[in-house]
Length: 470
Image 1: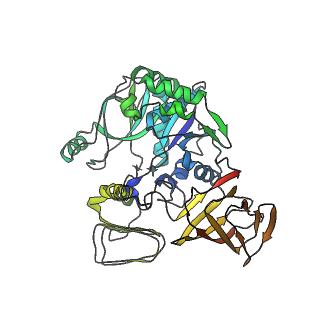
Image 2: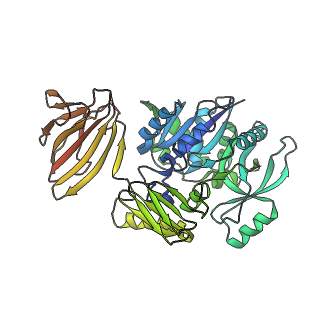
Image 3: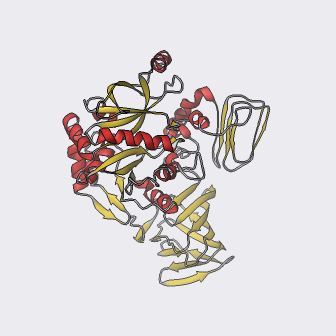
């Protein structure tokens, strides 16, 4: 029986701020290698003969980044299913199960933002789980606890299933424990970290969900039945999907079903849920430091320093987390790693934007980056990929000046279309229909100067768009 990887690429990863943000969350960032966590998730299973093309479930606003990252590693998805709103893991997995239920296949549910260092051991665990899954069990993977971790849920394993060697019945799921209970669980040998990865038949999952949380099945069935294709994506019916309760798979199914099973595994796993968790899966020097970027250390121990844009020097410190981005810097003691979410909550409550996006914002045609802003003006860098073009649009409140830095720009202003080369410029008046294209084979870089009474990104009226945006 073949296996369809179902990769869940939702979530914001707020505990990895300031690097992870709402528009560019941790699963789409290269945190542990030159590839993003999503790309690493797909690459580690790409050579398995039993694996079919993956099914990706992600949010609407990340769709173009997800598609581009799959293209970069030469992976063709069976479908990229877009969630109109976030409804947690149980509905997301139900949508995938509904999509796959007519197949004679298993579905391997993988969060897009986990690290697995021992791929061979993981492959062995999946094969063990497949034996139980083909018999109708809902199999999860339990990680051998390396220390008394209070940030993970736990699974208590029971006896080995007679017909599935290496697979145990689940006695119970336990929410995140306090330190004393976590230590007891580690010593007992019966408890394992809940990894959030699963293997089962689509029909078995839907049957269990129908028994225990039928409202999710009703909503997701309707969402899939009324879905439609849009370019590379599958859009679920928004009204139907929004009607689903927002539940995790553990709460909706796994904690209630009698068909739950667990395969204990030691695979070098981490959910990279915080900066300290990331440090644990990074190489460290003789003093226990993990660094990335342009970093200088002197008399520093057990510290993570990540410099994304600028030179960072740390002197005489211990057990710190130091993360630099172009518009924000985090300095925290490692014991306070979980409190990073409080910073994100503060930014949200005070109406700031540093939790939403980086200054560089990615679009399907390339990216733009804010350089300077002031009263009635804004300056941006823009990069357009070869062969791509922005929408035909107009603005009610701003005019724009474009200066080509490198490459060739094809610019349409109302009924006039012209080519502009390096060091040439043009002006787009308020209210003019205009479009920017890159007809060349090299990236187009230009500087945009906006001026006007309102400079918000929502002052765009699109008349035609290659990427189906309204």
